[in-house]
Length: 171
Length: 255
Image (cartoon, rainbow over all chains, first blue to last red):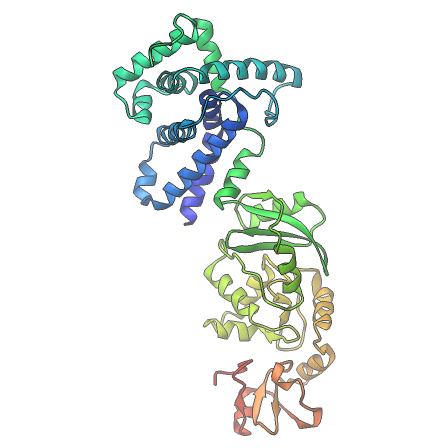
């Protein structure tokens, strides 16, 4: 019991930024990103409580959390229409000077909303590979897809993001 | 190509909002929550988890409380809006009605046993340290009982002030020294002078002539007995030789 709580506390502190960033890239706004990150960790906690100590020790935390987060986003998106991006009303970010921060935030949020508009399969692969910096092997594990599929989805995603293809008719 | 990649990396450098980890930990029940409550004792910082109240302290600032909690309890702590019924439960508990559940995780099993035993001592009564030690099955660990009570993370609520030395010395008290301990006991209706006079004469038990039962002074069963109907004993042997048996409620000796 104590063991699980200790592991979980470290897990949250080690991965909170990474999972929040993932949520932002996948949903396109900070409000949803926070909800996704919260759901991800709460699911992780419930799962951890049922795992044996060996399983917890051998857990590849990063890939495991990414997989949970991707599923959380998929479940949320199911049956939801694409939403308009909220630009205000989100939590203040930490670090840097206010002006620099505000500028960066606008740019980043704008990029996040563009990324989140990509079709799910390209978006997931692209975000895990290039935003989260996972290796292809890790992305493949997190998404449960073969490496070749991931590579081609990342490539297509990048192309769409750069405006070389609008993605219509692909999905 | 290159700029898109750089931008994507920057998107990955986004930080979670301030306080995010603490909120998640509180939701999962891993972190405790706390708030300041106005009570008969003045403002008290009270922390709780999903299992119950985990700490209470009269400290000047929330920063002090957080620091103390982290050191003593070792779990993360988040300021929170208390559940609606908690304030009422806290007031009832301090009025002598037991309504709260306590979360004693993080303490040793010995300390937990000491505190749980102490919880059974009713308002207006006191017991010696040696009684707690015997009741929890460690009759020789009297000093350890004292240490466990001195480190009680939930004073007032878990009434460590109701445990005193058998020689009548009130003893130290984490919640504000011996004077605070005396004033709380007086407030609860303990006749301290009588108690201390008895202890100074070496009289540890009071027996009731009509029932031939002996109790700890302050035991509830002696509350309506007139002074002339009491007899006093120095120890268990003396009481038993006089034909008295120990009270089954305050348990001055194993019946």
